Length: 396
Image (cartoon, rainbow, N blue to C red; front, side, top):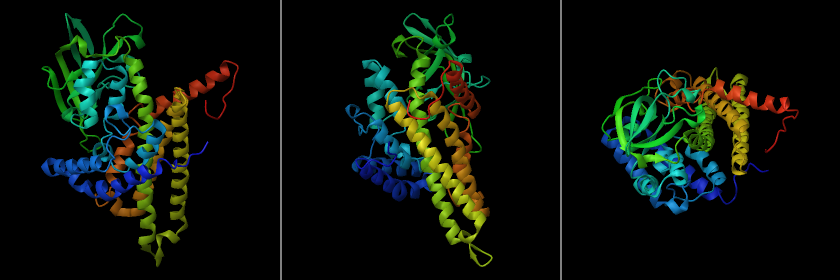
């Protein structure tokens, strides 16, 4: 197995890297401000991505995307992750949702939502997390949907529905089968965000950042019965298929963020002098470089191994659980060292590190907190021994 970037992928990966460093990253100050100027800047970036053949690279070709195979796109996603705006600028923000719809949507749903998603004409959102409910145990979800004639009536309270304020619709995980076993009690329903009773309460700040993580109430929200995504009671199956590859994408983007922080740190070590010589001459500073290199490389190899496992048809539960924890910790640690090397400047908005640091901390909670993944990985590995086997370190 080789973890080198395949020769066939290198040209498009290099083109995406150049687009990120030369176009997206310099535009970040304007994009962070929001308002008309940010909207115009983002529109220019998206138009340029389409013109240069870099739009929606991971979406299936039959949907109008670039058609990159899963493993090829993993390598591209690594450099796309350098900026939080990379996905939006390059048309891959909708990838998890478009793949989900591609597999489970009806012809009517495909026409209304899937095709516009890939073209970048609308944005999606996904509602699973609820306030006051432990998201590490989603069988506790309280939001319900009851079939009344030819309509679903939805009542509940969600939050961290990312992007709801700009989305055309939300895919809502809700309890539709109250008498079924826990993992067969939930379904996915598509809810247009302009539906009466769908109310955005607030954009929930995350460590001081407004990132469109919306709190939403559903008060007798009525949608057609045909808005059911897939089959009744199959919500968990659909969610798991969505989350597995999604966690790979998260971890690869984290590697892009870590690479950017690593670059900033190493350049700062050469540019900054203290006590008569560059910081790069200080042994403790070189320790930061060593630790960061080792953690980035370890997380990268673990992530690519998990991607290989998924591509080979495995559910890769252990591999994905491990990289979610290792990747989030790695990102947090690398950015933390970069801030330390920058000193007071690292605490300000003069570099991207302050925003990156806050996003990194959130990574240890969303898509499942570290503790849940650690417990799951340990339980699965020990289970193989309890059954009289062992654990082979390799592609499973």
